[in-house]
Amino acid sequence: MSDPSAVSSDLPRPYAEEPPVVVPPTGLRLVRAHPWSVAATVLLTGLILALYPMVLNALLNSSTFNQNPAFFLLLPAFALVAVLPTVVPLTVVAVLAKRRVTVGRALGLVAASAIVVAAQDSLSSVVRLDADAGGELPIRVLSIALNLMTLLLVGLLGLVIYPPLVGRNNLPALVLGSVVMTLIVAAEIWIGGTENDPGILSWTVGAFAGVGWAVAVLFTSPPAVPEMGRPLPE
Image 1 (cartoon, rainbow, N blue to C red):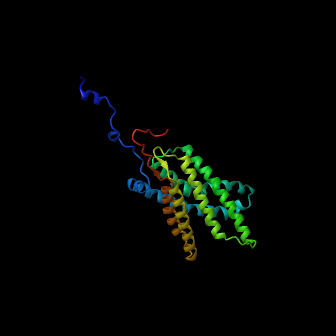
Image 2: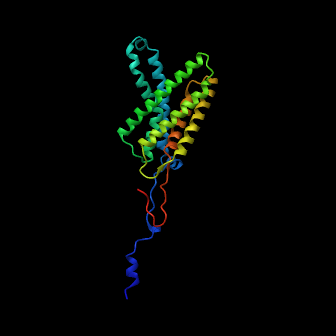
Image 3: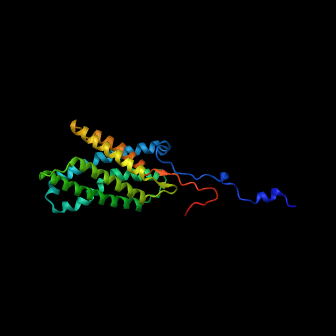
């Protein structure tokens, strides 16, 4: 009769003894794991928000650009710069969350987001023209809706271009984060406009909201746990 211990040693180890799957830090765990990196991202986003309107106003008020037909060739460049406050924190958070981030993917996200923002600007111009012509469209509500749509589209682009190495994307977190950021920005615009805010409030709120939105967009749910004896689907 054979030794039972020799037979049992050849059997596979139980699932309970297998090492657990390591999920990259996301959400609050990401902030706790990289507090200084997140803080630096907030400062960088605020700096971008502060510099963009200054550069834009300087170009718009320049007689050289106003009298030069080639000025219109710079409009795509304005769209590219306009997406930096959302693409930069999205990219940094993707790196911290250990997602698939490369230079090519980052440039692709900038280009695709610029198209989305340019489309938003075109729709906003149509809405403003309709309002000026005596239309009954609620311009503020539509502007908020367009901002929300832009955040959702850019967030979806981020999920596709920066896929997670482990785990899966969480679409409800994207929707919730985009709605919250839209409401925060809308409230800040209303408060800042009534108080003649010089811009510091909008930069601060925009920086914190932008980084928080990026964390919500790239929130990674843990991978599905397989049933006992059933392998994960490929």
